[in-house]
Length: 428
Image 1 (cartoon, rainbow, N blue to C red):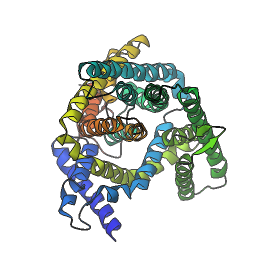
Image 2: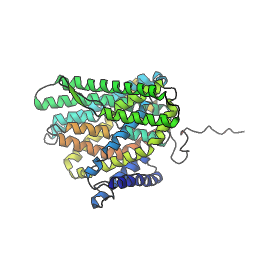
Image 3: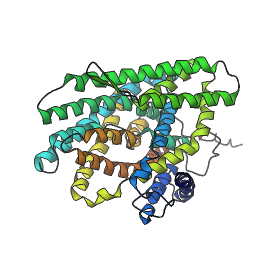
Image 4: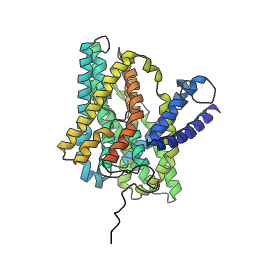
């Protein structure tokens, strides 16, 4: 009973908060996060009124499966952007920008935090600084996708952004695995080639292979059904299947084998949309079904935000340096790589701003980083940055897309139509 009431309050609270956000010209995703923050264990939940909000972090964690499923559908939707005809035009640009902006961000954060270590060794260790640098490369696809969908954004920047966000996950995964391996070696005095090189490559290969197989099987099975509702049901079933399979972990010959939920579901969507001739219509129906799920996902994400970390001045110090360095790295990396690939000035000026949101992937990395001697600091800093980026990032993404002319101000478009400028009225 309590879980059902909490889910209902989350959905209603998120929607009501979105009305206020509309008056303030803020994206709906920001409203959902704030609603979750208010319902969480540090605000209304602290009143300990059962059923009214989330009283403890454990109650929020109990609904983690919903967040995992939502991330699966988000990745599946982003995979739909990797259509061959689109990759022919933007594939090389997207890959170059996706890799370089992540590498530059990691380097900038590393330099800033290692410098902070030398100035105040007691605040942050070198191993933690290196690990945070790699975590900084991760970008949250969920918030970005929600802003794009809410405002029906369309144009070169939007198309490149969705491709880069998708590539960023694979690159960030590899950077984190290598950096965490080096950090562990600094603390233990032993370098593990398996941890630094083999396991990250295995994870990427396994994720892409599993996703490709799931996408092909989904297409083959869909052909036996002609009803739209049955095809939709089958698509939902396969996303749930890939989310479940991506959670499996095992060891083979001393190598820890696991897969990335985002990469698996993204590859499933990519393969399916490129071999299925009715995929576009089906994806539109999937998007309609997942709307309440995404609201619930972001409200739960807001409830997970830990306000307790704001009382630690050392976390705030490292967090401010981390946020400043990561923001600079994202902007410089995106600007430089866009200039290298000859993107337009509009894309060069605005892409970096749209890559600032950070959430689930970074938190997952921070959980792994807790194995370090200074792992608690890493997790606290990431929690602080997520708190800032999730509340501010969507609004910045919206402003960047408006500046690029790919969405118009809220309230001037029909929610059922793509947000494209009207043709000018001819004067007679």
